[in-house]
Image (cartoon, rainbow, N blue to C red; front, side, top):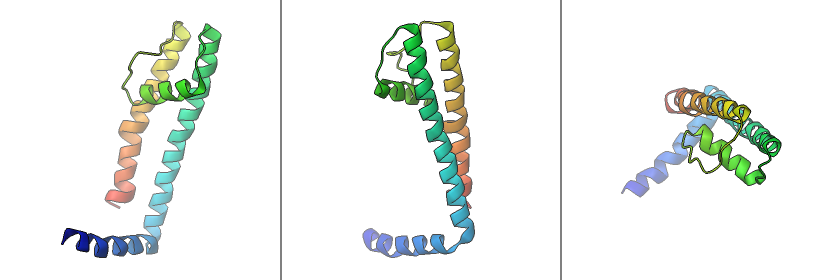
Length: 117
């Protein structure tokens, strides 16, 4: 019975969402915030890669993206670390940016744009 209701309700919700101009604007704003987050990850990964090379450590680009996402999400496994103070300051910047983006801006934007428009 639940599958039948989902099959009837989901298309109606999608159609209503597409027709509403404010819903489309909210979705566009949410997409812009998400693209800002992706852009920050790319910029931080590039900066990580070059800062590690400056320190004499050699890591792949995949490691740069991995480190950035792990640091921004506040997991911080500690398997890839900086040795210099510049690297540690960069780590703090990435951490605070991740906290603000992932724990404050993105969730509240999602709630305002999609959950409770």
